[in-house]
Length: 149
Image (cartoon, rainbow, N blue to C red; front, side, top):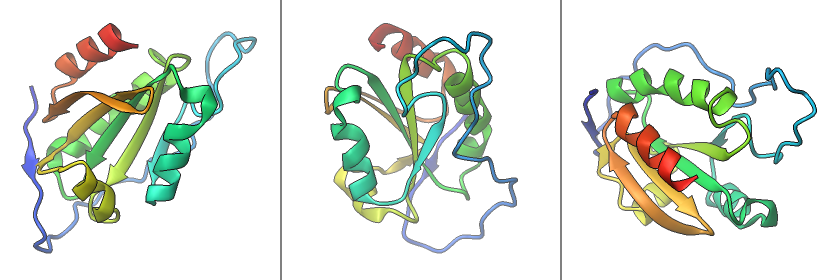
């Protein structure tokens, strides 16, 4: 199990990381599968308007949405990120929508959802929060996604 970081308003030095594209191309074997246009990628949400648009889109009404609140200076956030990308491309490419919200760039959403520990994963269905997990515990997160998707 991986750890957690606590968010604060103090400035910190970001860790050097390689950027991972928020637009991951479809790499599945079955190209005949019709995907929800929000699936098979991770959405980097930068505004509350973007968040609301994704949450309120009619094609997402019965779809599980996993929201990762993170920061680039948080080592556990960086450790779990590749797992989320793998899930978005493979395990859940046709059944779950993934989004990431950098708390340092979007304090409004961070405050709205009372994010105090990083990473925090908030799962939504039909526009409502249905589960929350703090810390980079991929085993428990996967178990809940499997239960709720």
